[in-house]
Image (cartoon, rainbow, N blue to C red; front, side):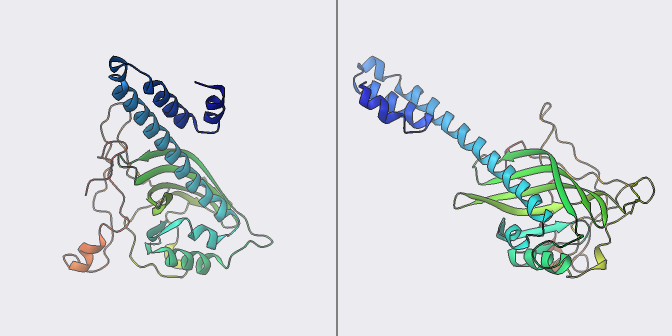
Length: 276
C-alpha cells in the first residue's frame, strides 16, 4: 500500500481503516487467498456490531444520567426532550403520566416553573447503572439507583427504565422510579415515611400506579429486567396482589391499562426484548 493511501486511511475510524485495508489486500490476492475473505468480512461485521452496541449502551447511560442533572436545577423543558412522544413517567406512587407533553406538565405543575431558586435543593445523584440493549438494537433498559437530597428531605428511588431508539437517537420510553425509602431531614432512623404522599399535589395522573407498595421500613423489590448474569436464571420477586385499577376489574378499560408502563418481570434473556 502506498504512503498516500496509508495517510488517507488515517482519517477514517479504526473499523473503516481495517475494512479498507482488507479490501486493498484482497484486490491483489490469489483465489485461494480470496477464499478467506468471507471469514474476515464476518469478523469485521461482528466487530462493527459490538462497537455499535457499546456506543448504544454508553448513550443510554448518558440519557439516564442527564435526567438526574436536569432534575437538579429544575430544567423541566430540557428534561422532557429526553422522552419519546408516547413515553410514560411514573415517579414514586403518584401514577402514570402518558406522553411527553404530560411529562412536562407534571414537572412544571408539581415542582414549579423551569429554573431553580434561592433556598431550593434537589441534588439527584445516580449510581450502579446496569444497561442492556435488545438484539435488534431498537430497545434498551437500565436499572439504576438514585440518592436524592432535597429541601423536602431524603429519598432513595430505584429506576427500571426502558428506552427506544428513534432516528438514531435514544429516548425514554418508560421512566419508572419507585422509592425504596423516603424521609424528612430527621432521617430514616427517626422518621421513615411509608409512602411518598402521591395524593398531596397536582396534577392528577392519567392512570393509577402500576404497582401499589410501601417504602422503608417495609420493602418492595422492583422487578429486574434481566436474569442473574452468571446463572442465566431469572429472579422474580413476589408481586402478590399488588397493583391498581384504572376501572372496575374485568372491564376493557382496566384490561387495556395493565400493560401501560408496566415493569417487566425479569424472565427475558439479557439483551432481548421483554416477552409480551
